[in-house]
Image (cartoon, rainbow, N blue to C red; front, side, top):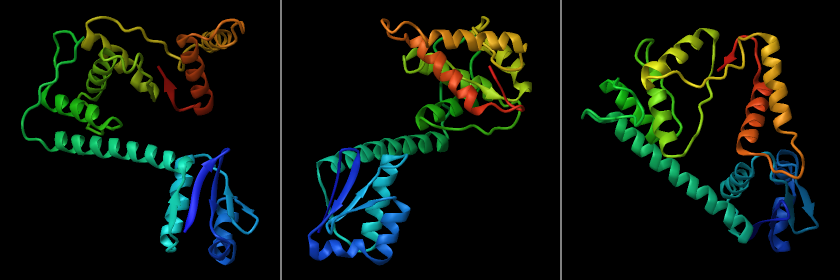
Length: 249
């Protein structure tokens, strides 16, 4: 039986010499050496780098061993990664189950965003909002005019009230600017605090970039605040995803 562990930033796959030779030759050597960029550990097995996604690499290794009928056991380091994968898998399954149950319900759902003005949600909007909250990660592809923006603001309001989020990042074409700005006022009964980072005067945008850069280069004696870290994250996102046909509010 093979042993799979994770220690010192590498997966370690080893086994007794009589079976370890199986994964050091032929097509197995091609898989571990070339696909996973691994290095042999003498005649005992492989030292495998985690790659860009430590969990994905774990799945690749275990799936390959299972597919080829190679029995293995997890040692402490690898077991911890497996347990973490299982926790997230259960969360996903639960979210998917709840989201599907919400989506398929025939009973009208009430949803009252805590900070909305007197304007409420229509039945189909309440259903969509509940679905997005249940799914954790979701999408809404309803037809134009169905109230998707209000649905997103309702979800945003609920998550912010719970302290889960504290802001909303919107990326879209220039034509969406006015709708997001106006809809905020309709939903919350007041103007929103909105910072537009594209589709504005170039000099003004450069000023925002300078402010963000200054905020992330504070004296080393002080730790960056949450606001400064948020600035840095937003600026990095904009820099790495900037395209001429997309804008950001």
